[in-house]
Image (cartoon, rainbow, N blue to C red):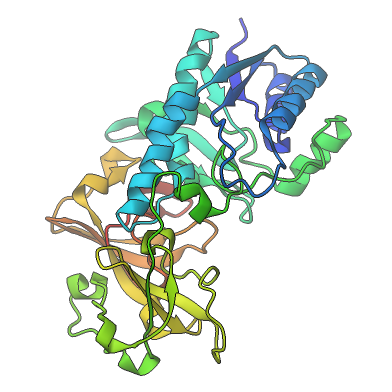
Length: 389
């Protein structure tokens, strides 16, 4: 009897080709389209609207010859992803809703719906790989980078656990994006040339301040420019000191403008400041949510944009490979990144009582609290955590 695989079919080319590949490999494939968002507040473009997405999904299922179903998970998505997004911005952190969407929706709430359709496995169009391996601790599921280095999406799956990976299939993990497009053209799939979706997972490309103002109040505050010369080297070389951001105060710089709410901005951001007349572009160095102040500096090489270490506190630490978890006092060499599509960076993981410190060989630009740091053993992603500082 054929193994039943439910594919999260979105209307895009990646999930379409994933479904075709599985059907071609002899699986009993079912397409399941999930609607996770209804509100259009702050939406910049009507591209990839629900109506278009579901139309392309239905055409894909019909072309491939698989059953098609729909499910509305918007209540779960709002409670488990969007409300988290608002809470994080309000606290002065910059969340990654795509990571949470995978953990809470695609590989949790969606899997529950897929099981109702008889699914033994659940597949998506992610560019990543998963396999089972024997270890001294027993069988484990390994999350591996996709072979297409330009599209590797293992970062977005960094919060999945062993149970979730045991059900997951990623048919595109061995392919490149051009190869996926070629397959779609050869098979006459309607979305072969369709643009990839952008913006917040299932919400779309939004004007973020407008979107956030649904729950976060606009409030005028000061923009303070910090000159490069104010920068002081770290007071010591301990990893705790390297991971601690320098505390800025208004008297370190000069006011150059006003903003509409510090919680609408993030470290490293350039756009949206509406301050001109500077020799170099302005970048956000820090935000003070309590006093509603944004600190900025000129040039993308401003010293305060860089930090050599970061901290992931204990509650945020997640091991995809629990058998490789570290104990306080243990150090380990690793490859790490702090954002999607960043090249993996050589670093050291230092496990302390309060959490995990990642000390990079080279200082990193725009270490942003709330974003996810991930650490690898070669091509395998073994752990992750939201950056605490």
